[in-house]
Amino acid sequence: MSPRGKLLLEFALAALLLAGAWRLGAGLRCLPETKGALPMFWVPPGQPPPDPACYSIELTHEYRTYNLPEPGNLRRFSFGYSKMLADFFLVDTLGNMDWSEKTPGFLNWAYRMGLAISALHPKYAFPYYAIGTFLSFQPDYLHLSNAIFELGSKELPDDFNMPFYIAYNYYWQMKDPKGAVPYFAEACRRPGAAPQMCTMAGKLAVSQDADILEITHMIAQGYCINADATRAKIIQSDFEKRVLPRVADPAQRERLRTAFEKTIAACQRAQEKE
Image (cartoon, rainbow, N blue to C red; front, side):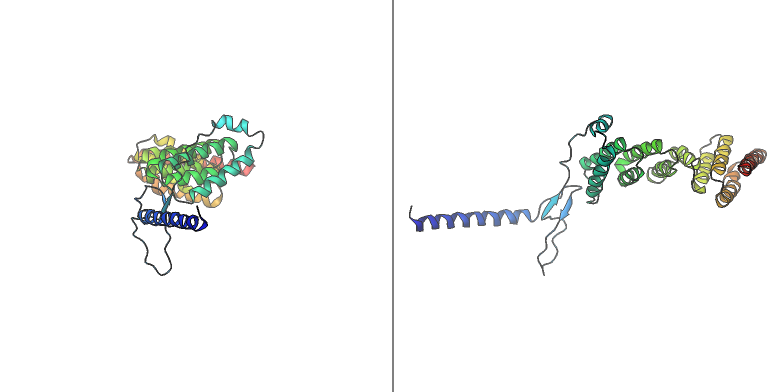
């Protein structure tokens, strides 16, 4: 073939490719939406925004379906670098969660990453907060959010936030006050807990017909553990104004008041001796 013929053939092939790309591009300008994917738009300067139902391209992490080793094995496979590997996993997870993707594959992947990070560094509080909270905004994944916070609550027994977040999911997200009671009560008993943890636990427990003496004991425990001047005052005031009035029997109400006052007096005497 002569040089001119070869040049014409190359030109024809280039034109054919260009026409194919143009036609394909026209078809891609309005892709159907994939639920949970992140839409990406490219709008030329001076042009109106595209139809929200059409996407130039969509990005999804649905491919992240690879299986991680079992959490117990993962720690052994880290060869002593478990905390460093937990940091790498957390950065990867947070970086991807920032895309606001909601596909099932991605949400389950985020949960598995939470389990992996917990296995690698069980006392690392921030991953429980970050991944558990992220999952709590997905109505169908509240059970996985609670599972992450349950792990954190077990590994960090002095952290009142872990049981509180579970109580939050039950009470406000799942509309299940009864399910929230034991977690508000657990938060109340932990050091540094806000007094309102005890108030919520007491009010909900009374409304669920729980044992009144157990409620009184739980709130007194919260008082004893968190009895700095401000917290103690709020806990005592809330018990008298918000919990006791819910007890219908005046005699029982007075008996509970007496039991509560005796318990907190004993706490105060113990603290004075320290």
